Amino acid sequence: KIVVLDGYTENPGDLSWEGLERLGDLTVYDRTPADKIAERIGDAEAVYTNKTPISAQLIKQCPNLKFIGVLATGYNVIDTAAAKAAGVIVSNIPTYGTDAVAQYAIALLLELCHHIGEHSDCVKAGEWTHNADWCFWKHPLVELAGKTFGVIGFGRIGQGTAKIAEALGMKVLAYDEYPNKALETDNCRYASLDELLAQADVISLHCPLFPSTEGIINKDSIAKMKDGVKIINTSRGPLIVEKDLREALDSGKVSGAAVDVVSTEPIREDNPLLGARNMIITPHIAWAPKESRQRLMDIAVDNLKHFVDG
Ligand code: NAD
Figure 1 (cartoon, rainbow, N blue to C red):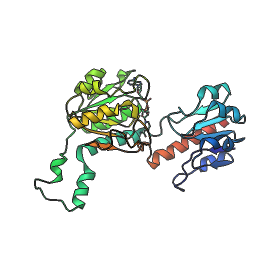
Figure 2 (cartoon, rainbow, N blue to C red):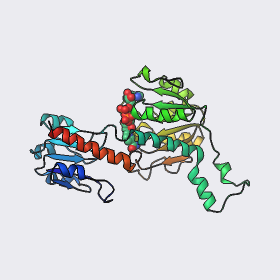
Figure 3 (cartoon, rainbow, N blue to C red):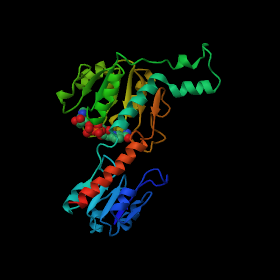
Figure 4 (cartoon, rainbow, N blue to C red):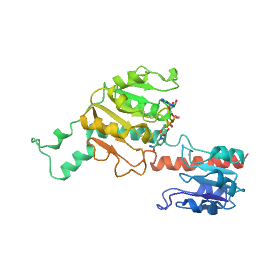
């Protein structure tokens, strides 16, 4: 018996659950509220979750459970110590969205440089002429070739963004707690955090959220950046102290910022980034092209197959 607690099934036909259907008796729920989790897992041996938490107490309540599959990279929703103690295998999916998130981070940067959406809206509203009010003057374009792309967290996604930035003619500076010199190229080298902050024209965040990285973009680190720097965050919202970024956007110190993640999700009405000038905010969707979601499903099926095969 296999139960998917939060398969987000409201878009039927979007993804295929066939692979899991072939492995057992499958039930897929759209979402599962906290008070229904134990009842829905029941006597199932395998459970899949994306965001629905599986606590130590739940693991105790479901003695048949042998396998927990997390339909995501981050597995902080699982009490892994309790799972281990109960002999329940936990699997996650670390690589399905690397290219998608790297592409998205660069898409955010390109939108900050070109304001394509706003220019298109102006044309559709009847504005084409080159007069003093022309929206072009409000949203000047920026060329990236020759500029410096700073990557904080040079792992899978950070390296992916760097490759695209290099293809755009940018120089890359990378900061990582565990540098791997073999990844350096003519246009890409490691730097200290302070050197990166001082030299980058664009800073893109790709480190995980740890106590050591929480608030890594704050008043002090922003003060060390170039005037007019652009900041991209597709990693985790709490990496940025949002009120400090808002002040820097208001003063013009940061010329533009684009984030796919915020400190509290869904975003709160009083989030200081809402309403800031030159600020793009999207709802944590960088991972989600259909191709990468299907890859996520395929790897999820493989993980269970490997488990069943011992
Ligand atoms: P990864 O593990 O391959 O890379 C993370 C890198 O950060 C590693 O090289 C690691 O050494 C480095 N690092 C760790 N601690 C650091 C520190 N204190 N300072 C600097 N670097 C540090 O992970 P990844 O697959 O590249 O994913 C990166 C992040 O992207 C994830 O942690 C996740 O938060 C985020 N993510 C977001 C989405 C989305 O939809 N927006 C999707 C997937 C992943």
